[in-house]
Image 1 (cartoon, helix red, strand yellow):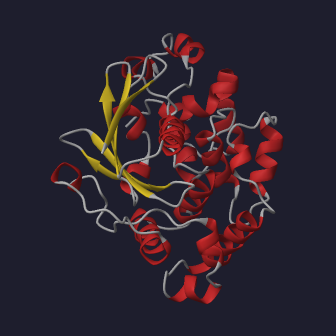
Image 2 (cartoon, helix red, strand yellow):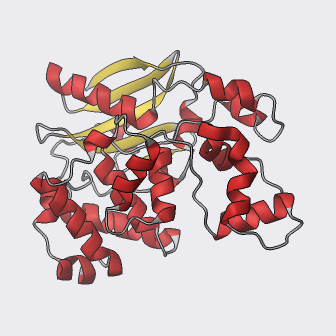
Amino acid sequence: MIEFHLPARQPFSFYSAVRSHGWYQLAPFIWDEPRRELGYLTRLSSGKVVVLRLRQAPGGVYLAALPELTVQERDELSGVVDWMLGLQMDFSAFYALAAQEPKLRHMVERSLGRVLRSPTLFEDVVRTILTTNTLWAATKRMTAALIEQFGDPLAEELPAEFEHLAHPLRRAFPTPQRLAESDEQTLRSQTRLGYRAPYILGLARAVASGELDLEALKNSHLPTPELRKRLLAIKGVGGYAVAVLLMILGRYDSIPVDSWALKSVSNEWYDGQPVGKAEVKAAFAQWGEWQGLAYWFWDWKE
């Protein structure tokens, strides 16, 4: 086992980052609420599957991992965790604005803003596609099925202190290369992805072949409209999905307008009267580059 600490730009709340949205409930994440610890299984570029144990530490995050790692693997893992938790993200400009808005002051008090991410954008795109037009229970089932059928297994026996944080499947999220070897019929009938099967398969094959370099978009300097255009070019990614992915990528100048957004804005400002996308966007236009973040964490009326 290796143990080390990673620094985070302050203020930082590990709990707020992990609980920012539902990813922590999806395999191979596993969350221990009493201990406030996050477990995850990831596959490094060497092919080694590693189980992680993460929790808040002074100034940042405590990280323990199994099995033993080389210096290069440790450096890679540090970068993975830094990305997953957005450790170096700077929200100071937004916090200065949010402190003046009663509906957003809780963000400053709880150090909200970071959104839990997967190690790769490929994994986050797949997860996001699996959330569309379905119930959350089905998203959880489909995610677990993908991992069980196509994920690389953890080779190590685990000591007792890791047992509660290694997902029961004991497998990492599948690589694009592994999924690309499958076929649509398998993904439909065995993995039960439904209409999403060709989208997931097409995405995996595009990434595996090098036709699509998703990871290059993680730190891209492309203007948001161009980045949105590239994400929308992925089959299975529509307006709602692209807004979620832009949030994950740290682009907050758009809002995922869905039925919930329409209802919430209607109740907040229009006394329950019907509204459209224009009203939703107008409600948060004053927040400019931060509007998606303001929307995501707004203290809505009950």
